[in-house]
Amino acid sequence: MIDKLRRVVTGHNAEGKSIVALDGPPGSIVGTERAGLGEIWITDRTPADNRNPADAGARPVRLEPPVNGSIFRFFVLATTNKQLSRQQLEEQAAEGFRAIGGEHCRVDTKRDPAMHTTRTVDYIILLKGDVTLVLDQDEVRLKPFDVVVQRGTNHAWRNNGNEPALLVGVLIDALPL
Image (cartoon, rainbow, N blue to C red; front, side):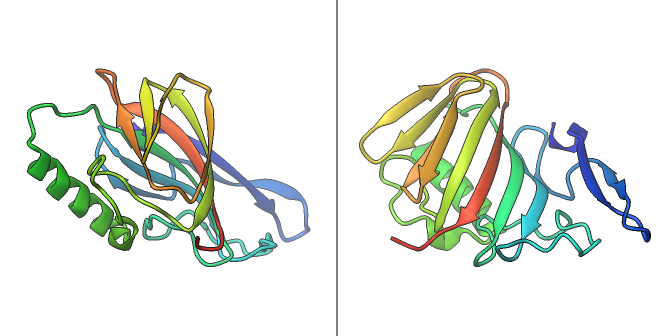
């Protein structure tokens, strides 16, 4: 699903005129058709540098943005496999977070194996699917076009539906709690 999404990135030509610099799938993708992340753009600092012509989305996928930076990404949540044991879900989540350098973000997974805490403020929009935001003491069921401002809390995303769910997120570096 992620590899079929289109991103259009603008830029400037040698004369300083606006152009389409990139038109295609996300710059970097990790995962499968059923679950994964697709990087649209990553910044290394604030303010961002729009002079660099490089594809800032074509980097290894990491859970958190660079210090003082941001990530704009699509992410797909697989349906919950109810056949797996808690231990199998825990192992699956641990491997998934390890693959994107996020193993240190899994501080308290008692409520859900996918629980994690990042040093970010995130703007998340559910585009397609039926998803629940799981927090330490609350749960919120989301419908398409609901927006979540996730502020460095321990959280997980649970797909309640029968098809992969599609979300978009902007992650901005923040001070740790």
